[in-house]
Figure 1 (tube, helix red, strand yellow):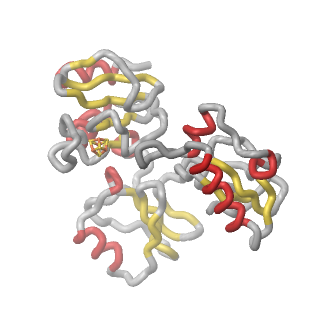
Figure 2: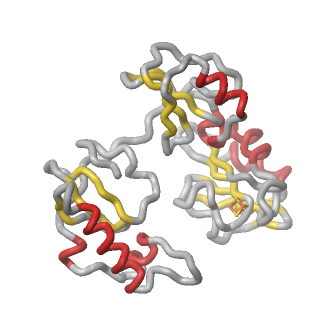
Length: 248
Ligand code: SF4
């Protein structure tokens, strides 16, 4: 659901999307299509269910898994009455941490916080709103918290890296990820995102990233402008800092 006059969740994965329409009102849109079908609030849930039914009947699920955008990328398109012809509202980029009209937006390295950090953020008694951007909104706060373990500086280099749990937390991981991502963060060129993935699945960032390091048994593949599952030469960990800092 992203039903405002500007879309804040355009970069957030969602197979069936109920969104603001470019000219006002709502559309129901299959992820991967540029347009959706105009719908009233009353009609939108039913259309979303119809799209879900079409997705399963059209072969969108294989081995218990599947994504709408992948099905559409294969050229399998919903019927015109579900695809619609109305474009969504303009998209906004994810906001940086800092003070906003709604309160204080506080980032968390890798989207993770300890119970102590949560307790400290909750102590003032304000409502906490989780966001899809690895940040928490302290609703109505008029000052940024000075809580260790949070990020309030938009220039913090850790905001340029994304990493999954990695080893040893995930049994599928082939290498540790977050310590490497933390160490490489200051070397990532400004305006770029580095994704460090413990395996080819790419859980932390399913979309393409400027730079992706995917763990293998022998080191990490370095992928430019691709996804964790893409193929690329393997590099040993000690070679990575110079490779990352040398990126244009
Ligand atoms: S990308 Fe692989 S290693 Fe990382 S959390 Fe997902 S399954 Fe585990």
